[in-house]
Structures are given as C-alpha cells and as structure tokens.
Length: 76
Image (cartoon, rainbow, N blue to C red; front, side, top):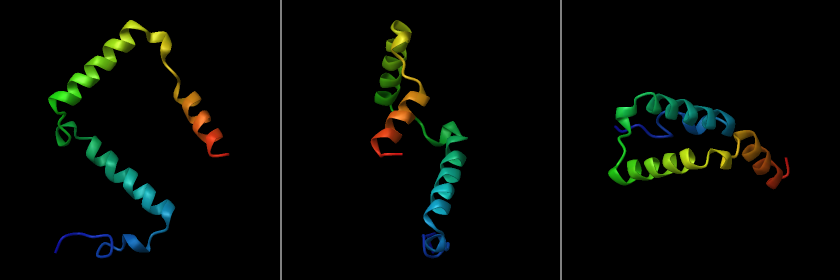
C-alpha cells in the first residue's frame, strides 16, 4: 500500500504541524543534491543568473527587504 495523507495520519495534524512536516521532508530531500538533478535548461538559467549577479551585484535585494514587503502586502 502506498503512503498517503490518511494512512500516515497526516490528515489529523493541524495546519502548522503539516507545514512543519513538509519543511522537514523538503530539507531531507534537499540534503541530497543528487536527489534533485538539474536539467540542462535549469543549469543554464542558474548560470545566467549568476553571471547577471556578478555583473551587477548592487542590484540585490536582501531577504529582509523581500520578507518585509511580502508581509506588508498581506497586512502583517
């Protein structure tokens, strides 16, 4: 039987607990880079973005600025 939300009891968790579980699962996947190989197109896009950043590092927006802007948009 394949694992499912119901069979694992995940449906009994509240939203915060489910989000925390998803984050933990994602972190376990991301810990193994070989688990998520990049396609040639993805690698090319990353290379392009790195080159853009190297050419204009002053155009970076900090995570704090992005987070503050997002929270302001949703009224927090």
